View 1: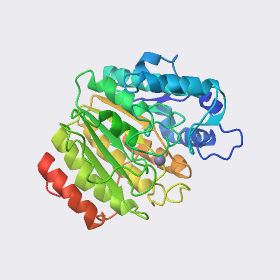
View 2 (view 1 turned 60 degrees about the vertical axis):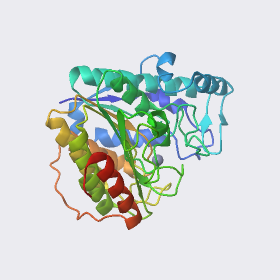
View 3 (view 1 turned 45 degrees about the vertical axis):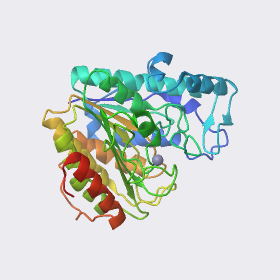
View 4 (view 1 turned 120 degrees about the vertical axis):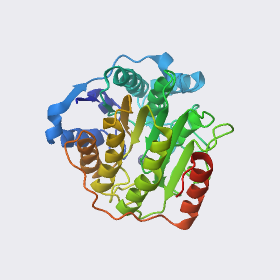
Length: 347
Ligand SMILES: [Zn+2]
């Protein structure tokens, strides 16, 4: 099996000239270098981004928002809000990665090969009209690559599962599919940090109740809670839902020591998640797999991503090394209600 990676040096033109913003070109350089050092590199094909297709952006974003980003980008480097900057190249860069995500979804479906998109900036906080679900900022994001890939696969009639394990809630993706029962979205994140959404009781809008599953973990949660999440939520829901396509928002900012969060995952947690997805993949059930790199501002980009990909591709046998531990009761009780009522699962 070959892993198709989308990497493009064009991302370097999206940068804060002061060099102080945590979302900077160093992130992808570290991530790519780490993958290159792995034996998995022999099974990788790297391609750049295609020409941007503006109409594809409008699959998940309003035309007003797309126009707004184009206009703001033309003004050159400045901040759109307290967190999020654009440069004169940002519109084109983010649109190229969005187009790549769409094409990756289609090609993955055709060939059965997994695709890994390495975009900058990330995408999962960008909602239909940008700022999503009342979030104060765009959280560094411009266009939502995971949502575009999921929409492409949904439009081809597949049962789509979005798995978002970035440490921040994927409010943009959830906003896009909030009232769409055909896209199931499981999101594990740190509670009570940016963007402030993703409570366990947020289960989807009218007609889509139970298709959005949020697992907010308290600060200092780590591998034991992630193992619990995979065993008690992710794997059972996959068994019931039987996804035909999986789109992953793969952020590595839950890794211990990340400067933006207070979670303590290690590579074990990422390996465990990858193992769960691989099990579905090799079982032949998943016809398309698109992984989008989201956040990660420290060592997670180096060690978390590599472990994730190595386990996913079978370069590493995954051994269960960690005893699962459940999060606090408020969270497990909420999940018990949702999994019981909408999924027929016991927690
Ligand atoms: Zn994040």
